Image (tube, rainbow, N blue to C red; front, side, top):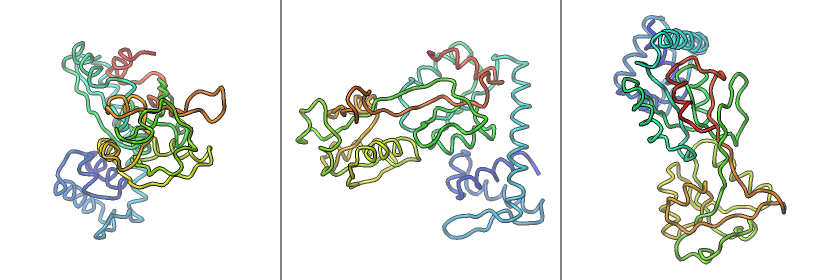
Length: 294
């Protein structure tokens, strides 16, 4: 067995699909399939049951999965230890981020990191929070910007930075609410909604907000792409609840929401920079942290 094969095996097991795993690994599907077949030949047993729609981990695969994750963590720790000896003259930062993260200008921050350490490589992975936490735990990521609305950080992980974001409503330019500065949730009960559905971050926060207000939403559209959600709103097909920075950049009318209880802050969601330890072992990750405001 090779570490590369184990990394491929874990990726397919995590997403249950060869094509999506190949995309995440940035390799061809045929190359990924060949790697898994070679692993199964080495083991003498299949690790996946393949169907036309998905792949399922076999009994042998379940036994292998825990060992594979542990070996990958150990390999990552060894690589970090060696990188620490080299400092930040060379090395790599594996960074995860949820799709709607706007609290930090990542391109600008990565550019500043490259300015200080030109030989450093940065691998940026965009995925839902749960997937990011899984690969952070496995050692494939050094740091991850995640949304913590669905669940607190798992045991063994820490938050190095917190980023609260106010949630607002966006509507089409000709919508009846467009002139309004603020709205109560109950006033939105009859509106068609465009739901941004990409994991359990923003979607969960919005659902919890309306549940707490005892307002039932009518979901007209669901999409995993924020640009598409905003385009549907722009064409008057529904309204959406999004983070305020996303709303301001969209050019759409932005409407604040009254808090559920007088005196409370406006509705918001919480994002965080998650890591396995308070002091990352990867010196490039530490250099990146120095560029982030506290």
